[in-house]
Image (tube, rainbow over all chains, first blue to last red; front, side, top):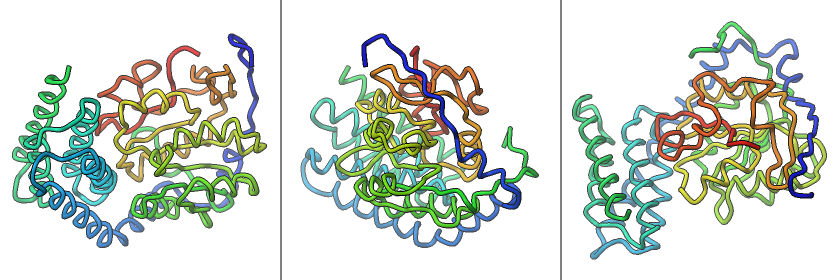
Length: 158
Length: 190
């Protein structure tokens, strides 16, 4: 297609018709059913989160700073925790995992991550796995600390 | 739950939904949410090849896709799909469910042609709101050569409640940050 030419394509959205076919369920019922379904898989998902966390801890016990392949694996595991934990009452653990992803993403641009910055995240993940003992103030302090670590890491690379 | 009339109804029984997500837990979570909404028989795929086969042979009404697909990304898959010439399936509503988005993928996310990008973890309420939103998304598609997807200027439909518009959507560190529940596929000027 020539540069500068914009083609407009009318589209029929078939989903619009289907969801309005008589029947179905109330939105309140749809939400309740979906939440019940998530409740049913909660034990398995929590187990998967714990397995991911155990692997994160194991990977960071290796001597020396994490190499590129270790960082890539840590990123995947943290991303998994980020996407799962929040569904099952572990929202702050998910946020800590997201922060670890941020740290590793920034580190991959510069060729490496500081071991201490990674370790702070891993210890925070372990703490936030059982958030009931921390209280709201404690959880916020942990997350604020992680934000500072990531900000500091970014600043050093800028 | 602003904007959601809980007494309203949704019928997903006849909707053909394709879910593409290689991560078993993330896939399971999305699948259970869709089942809760009344989806009867979703096509569930773990890899792009299987999803392509379905898109080339079956009528699909909605694609829910992970941003991470192993060797490739959900953004690349959506870009392929929009230009694949697979009939109406090229133009179906697409919701990308995204984990952490690497800075290197931000432009791809903006330009791939998805109707909506949701940041994990996607709550049940937010997913329902966005499914309803894409169902009433009547935007014309535009093809600029570089971009093929829904018109990003939202002339015919407002973005969902709580979603920032246009350039603000794509500011790294805000729209993709945890707590920013969603990112409309609404980039800069066309």
